[in-house]
Structures are given as C-alpha cells and as structure tokens.
Amino acid sequence: MINRLRAWGNRKYVDLIIWRNRRTAYKERVLVVSNHWDGSVQVFYHFLLGYFAPLALWLRKTGTKTIAVRDCGPMNQWFEFLEPEISVEIVKPGVALHTLAGNRSRHHVVTGLDYPRKHKKQQLPVAIEAMQSFLPKLEISSTPILIIDRTTTDDFHSSSMSETEMSGAQRRSTPNLRDVCDEILVQGSFVFADMATIAPELQVSLAQHSQVLVGQHGAGLTHMIWMQKGSTVIEIQPPLPEEAIDVFWLLAKALGHNYLRIPQFHVHANLDSSDLIEAFRSVNPKYLGTSNGS
Image (cartoon, rainbow, N blue to C red; front, side, top):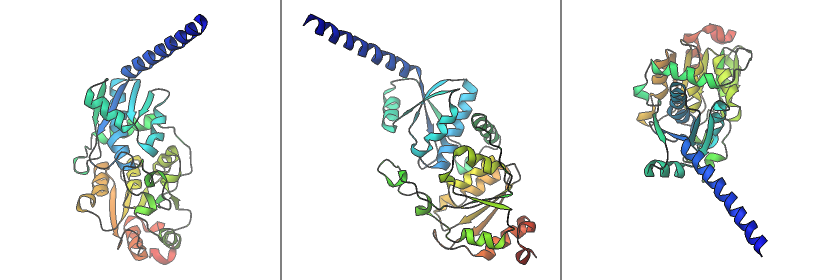
C-alpha cells in the first residue's frame, strides 16, 4: 500500500514538473498576432501580407527566437520555414484571443501590410526580403509567363474550421483559361499552376522566374510580390464589391509593376480570347502565336 502511494505521488510530482515547465516555456514565448486589413488570415492574400510579412519584418528587427502564432489553417505550412532558426508554436484562435484579452503572457501585435490603399512602397520590399530570407531557394527553369488557374477547391475551406465559406474554383474560376492560352500563346512561353496544390517554395520560385503573371482576381495574384520590379500583371476581373476592385492594381502599382485588367462577365464565365490577345499585344506581341501577334 505504501509503495503504491509512493508511486502515485512520484507520478503526480513528475506531472506537476512537466506542467510547470510547459507553462514556463509558454510564458517565455511571445504570442505574435496581426492587425490586418480585412478577411481571414486563413486566406493567402491576408495571411502573406497581413500576417507573415510583418511577422518576418518583426523577427528580423528584434531577433526574437521563440514565438507563438495563431492557427491559420492551410497557411500554417509557411510557418515551418521559420524553423529551425525560430521556434514556433501554433495556438488556436480562441487561445490567442484569451491570451490577449487576459494579458496572460508576452504578446505583440504586428500591423498588416495588406491594406490596399495604404501600401508603403519603402516597407514592402524590405518585408519581401525578410520573407525570402526564411524561404528555401529552388533552381527551376525560367518561364516568361506564369498563368494561375483555379482548378481545385480544398477541403479545409468547406469544413467547420474555416473562417470563410468557399475557396478556389468553388469561389471563382475561368473554365476556358487553359484552352485560350494554349490557342493564342507561343508554346513553351508559359506554365500553368494551381497554387493551392503545390508547395510554397515552388509557388515562390515560379513567380520569381516569371515576367508576366496572368490570373483571375484572387489570392494567387499576390505572388506578384516575388517578381522583379517592372514585371507585368494581367488580372482577369469579374464583377466585384467596390472595395475589392482595385486591390491588385494598387499592389502592382506599389511594387512598380505594369498592370492590365481584362473583364469577365461573371465569376465562372469563360474568357473572351480577344481580350487576352489585346492584353499581350500591349505587353509584348512576341508571346502570341503567329496568327494572333500581327
């Protein structure tokens, strides 16, 4: 009986030590949350510019090595690139809110860079460089034109854990985009990508090795941040709420890119090939096939 009590007491003591160590480690971490423009940081545009970019800037400025961040669902894979240089713990949104509201541990609020009408031309390049310092570099073949095509809908954004109702092709699509590009563009001058289906480091590398980015209005156009200044962005734009119309034009302008907009009748309408032909004629006719470039 005494031995059982002693064993029980030892287990409780060990559990207490583990709990105290975890609590101490938790309190030593800085919880970093974002004050971003709008939407959810489970969505790529708001995550990358609203959370990850200012976080990378803050980490570079402060040299902090141990942090906690709020759970961003499918975007959490980007936090993995901070390790092993930075120790990262992902906490549920409710835990992050409780920590802030109760002032229960060290925390810091970073200001998002996703405000379309408040892009800071001086700060954006520094934030991009800070993010790139954490990301692996891939050697891939350079392709002049990157075409972002929504072809899938991820399961997460259809689940109860999602803070938005839809994603990917369920939200918006351009059904004939691939057929039109195959028809009018010089073969070998372009590559298609559904960014939601490939690893982050490949997403970045594809954009870095491109000079023209084509895509329907959506988070994928955020990848223009990795392109060299003076690149071109062609946005396929369906009818949108007023506050969303100029989001990517303003970002392109802040980055020093050329920007063209071509219309789409509704969020799942086919693209008029003549509109894309005219866009490429103004960008560089050499990308058009013989029958379209003259």
